[in-house]
Structures are given as structure tokens and as C-alpha cells.
Amino acid sequence: MTMLKEGRPTTPQLAVEDFAPVLPETATGNRALMLEEKLIFEIGSPDRTGVDFAPLPEGKSRLGGLERSAPIGLPGLSEQETVRHYTRLSRQNYAIDLGLFPLGSCTMKHNPRLNEKVARMPGFADVHPLAPIATVQGALGVIYELGEWLKTLTGMAAVAMSPKAGAHGELCGLLAMRAALEARGDARSVILVPESAHGTNPATAAFCGYKVENIPATPDGRVDTAALEARLGPDVAGVMITNPNTCGLFERDMKRIADAVHAAGGLVYCDGANFNAIVGRVRPGDLGIDAMHINLHKTFSTPHGGGGPGSGPVVFSAALAPYAPLPFVEKTENGFALIEEETAGEHHGGSFGRMVAFHGQMGMFTRALAYILSHGADGLRQVSEDAVLNANYILRSLEDVLDAPFAASGPCMHEALFSDKGLAEGFTTLDVAKGLIDEGFHPMTVYFPLVVHGAMLVEPTETESKAALDQFIMALRSVAERAKAGDTMLKGAPWYAPRQRLDETLAARSPVLAWSDATAA
Ligand SMILES: *Cc1c(COP(=O)(O)O)cnc(C)c1O
Image 1: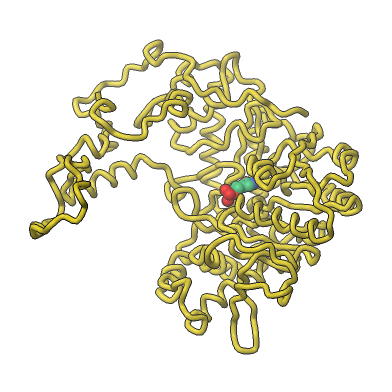
Image 2: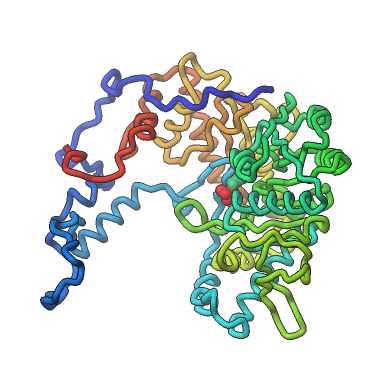
């Protein structure tokens, strides 16, 4: 199996005029109740304002001649115009609260309202990171208890709560690995990363100064264990392996790989972004993992994307625990203590330092703990089982119409992977994705992982009902059949979105980031 270098087609292949459908134009540009909205600079006028300020008293300027001499061109809108502007734009957005969000590798699951309610309790929401420790015992208790859950669920010895996203957690894990290697006087230079890895893995390793080497995948979509073992040696600091991996498959050789890496003096990082597929069933600590991040915003239902900051706590094996970052919360006889300094190995031994100014994403901690406590241990296990069941339902319902490269090797985990094999000549994964928008669905992840041609990675999550899955399957089946039949209309999709097929290359290469009269013209 090789990595694809060609990427996704980003320039429309046909001009819309070539086959534009006869949709009646409206005088306003609105389409029924979906309103066309101009840029904020094009509506209102600069001298309009929603608030009345008393005129400023004349005073002597102390700016030494540096005063602004021309208006800065901020838009001017009344309160109602402002509210309507943003409400109209928000209706053009797709969101998890509107419908199924099948992005593979992202785990877009329902954000329970209970979590939100808990996070908004004033004692949590208004807590200040510099408040005296005695006054924030409850908040520290939340951090501590969540950390204990994460250690128990993963079977690991220590946890760092401060990393603020999955990628940040990877950095945390690799810094701890490097500190451990350096402490034994054995700084090494290479990190091995499988071909199917998320882009953050090689990026993190490179950012830490390591040379990144790819390990190929087997034809059944897993790490080529023999190739990995053959590459181990005194220069290999460690491996970064995602399990379940980005093809939606469980790495069955994980224990064997970990044992081989350890025998060769290296360390094992596990990208735990897909932990939601195995939580309650597999403890990564039992597989020989040394460090793993957990995306609270994926596995434990806290919002992400535009909806909220992520949070990426990292769990560590006993071997790496001494190198975990500061700060951490400790339970003492007198309540919870926040350990902010490592004095001569007093606490863990050799912390590599700090990742962030304060303690991490407090709002995400309260949400994640609310989610965990409301499910309980048995409920969390049910979550992973249902996530896997839903993904397999999609895989088996569509494998007759879309090529499923690894379906023959058995069930998938939490996401179903398809390829573009079998689409009509000239039709691509992108056409299928854009067609789904017309059907009212956010597209699945496309062109990732790179080990599959024209990949379509679908992750339904456990929170979708069978009715929702059936509707999605029906929509994707219909679009796939049109792509196989060579329906030209699909090449111009989405037709019903506020904008049709965009030239993504142009948008990426020549982005227009500031408004000017010239932009408008
Ligand atoms: C999402 C994801 C990441 C990165 O996590 P962020 O929280 O977005 O930084 C890394 N690896 C995998 C496999 C992922 O799915």
C-alpha cells in the first residue's frame, strides 16, 4: 500500500454555464426563506450606530500628532441590522445541532445539554486561574477526578490535564518521551510514523526536532509490523501509532509492536483521538503504550470546531510519569493542591516544564466529567459499542454501491472507509461530497487517509438514531449511484447551497482577507 500524493481536485472541472439548471432568478437573490446576505461592510453605513454615546469632551491630545486623520471604516449598523446579519449568516452554517455530521477522524457527536448546564454553573464558569487555592477546591476536585477517570479508563499511571488539543497533547507526549530519553543519556533522532497517520503526528515529531520516517501499511490497512520491526534500532526514539487507526481499524499487533519498540530502547506514543471506539473495552496501558492523548472534544462529547476550544489531556505509563508537565493537581490530607513547581524531583522527578500558562481548559473538564458521570462505567462501554455498531451499519449498507477497500478483512471500528473506485470516468470523491450538501448533509471526511484513493471516511458516532443513519445512507447511496452513472449535474453541485462549486485553489492561493471598495467591485 502506498501513500497518495495527488490530493483532492480543488478547481471546478466544468464551468457552471456549461450545464446550469434552469432555476428561476429572484429579484432579491433570496431563495425562499434562505436569505442572501451581503458582507457587513456593504450594509448599513459607517455613521450609523446602535448606541448613543455622549459626545466626547474636547481635550488636549497627548498623541503628539499621531492621531488618526481618517475614519477607520468600521461598519455601522443598528442593533436590529446587526442581529439580523449574524442570524442570517448562522442559518447558512451546518452544525451538529442541525443534523448528522459524518466527518471521519473528527468525532462530531451530540454535546449533551447537561454538560452545558454544569459548565455554566457560576462556581465553575466564573473561576479565575489566579484565585487562591483554598477558594477553588471544587474546581481542582473536578480536574483531579476527571484525571482519575482518564487514568482508570486507559490503565495508565499518570495524567497531564493542561494540553489544549489533540495536537498539543502529542507535543506534550513527545516532549516527555524526549526528556525520558535524555535523562538516560540516550537522545535519539528518529520517530517512526505509519503512512495512515493523521498529519499532526509527523508534524509534532518534526516540531520536536525528530526526523520522521514512514512505516508502510499492509493491504488490510494496518501497520506493517515486520517493516516496523526491521527499522528499529539505536537511533529510533519511538513510534507514534493511532489505535484504532485512521482507516477505522484496530491495530491488532499493538502489544507486539510496543514490546519490540521497548526491546530496542524506544518509547511508544499512541494517538488516542479514536479512543471513543474502545473506551471501556481496551485499556491502552495494557498494550504497552507510554503516552497517549485523549481528545475530550471527541471521546467525551465536549464541543469543538467553531463550537468550543478542545482539550487534550495526556496519560503516561509509569516509565514516563516522572517527566509529565506541570502543573498537576494532587490530593492531600488538607484538600487539593496545585503543584506548579518541581523542586529537585520532589513530586514526579523530572518534569519537562509547562505546556500552558494555567491549568488547561476548565470548561471542557466540567463538561467531560459531567458526561462521564452521567454515563457511568457501563454507559461509557455502551458508547463505544454503539459507535462501532453504527459505523458497521453504514459500512455494510453501502459496500454494494461504494468500494470499501478493507471491508473484506472484517468489521470496522468507529468509522467506515470507502474509496472512489467504481465512480464513472471523470467523477471524483469531491463530486460525491458536494452532492451530499445538496441532500442536506455535511460531507464526510474526504481524501484522508492517504493510503486509499479518493478516500471517504464516515464516522456516524453513537449518538445518531437508526432513522438518522437510514436517511444518511439513502442520501449517500443516491449520490453514489449518480456518480457511478456519470450524472453531469453532480459536477456542479452543490446547487442549493448559498454558493455553488467554488474554486478552492484560487481561494487558498489568493485569499481576499480584507474588505475594500475594490473588493466589492
Ligand atoms: C483529531 C485528531 C488529531 C488532532 O486533534 P486536535 O484536537 O484536532 O488537535 C490527531 N490525530 C487524530 C487521529 C485525530 O483524529
